[in-house]
Length: 209
Image 1 (cartoon, one colour):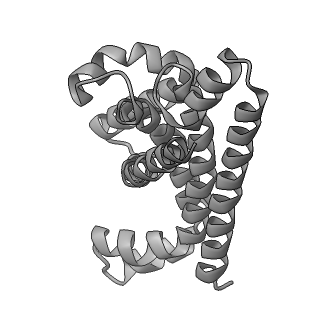
Image 2 (image 1 turned 180 degrees about the horizontal axis):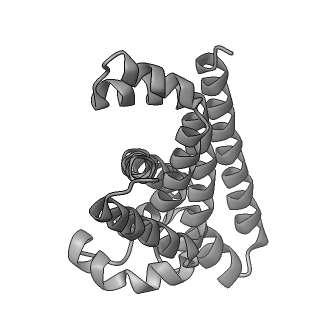
């Protein structure tokens, strides 16, 4: 049970780090290409939006199966905690990207216009205006995404990805051992509560309003 708990936490933490980076970049790209009159930028926005919408729509358990060939090539295996990472990342990054895009759109446009009027570069606007102004929402969004990922790790465990889901399914359900299933469930709930508390604490420290 200890190894399974570590695998679940490891899968979640590694995935959420990659998802935070990839989701932020996708969300920023969606935000920056919105309402553009240039054909190429419109096309880029459409392509990225299609990618995000498609992978957000595919149920996670089906996505795992669809990505098995790619997982074998990328990770060298389709069994174990490491093999779950591509599916976890690809399923969660589009979800977080939409949260990032929404957070950016909620920023007062007057602040952005004032920054542009003062001659701020695009990089300065991103790192000194967009990011600081939306940081509480971004942290809150990554917390929600992390909790979803914990649930995804349990589903991934049902097809051999390791973690508490795998233990609950093999050693609990298939072995008709309800104690194992219940213990794994309680530990997953505790992990979810821990991530939620950390996220709420971070938002309160960051949000100065």
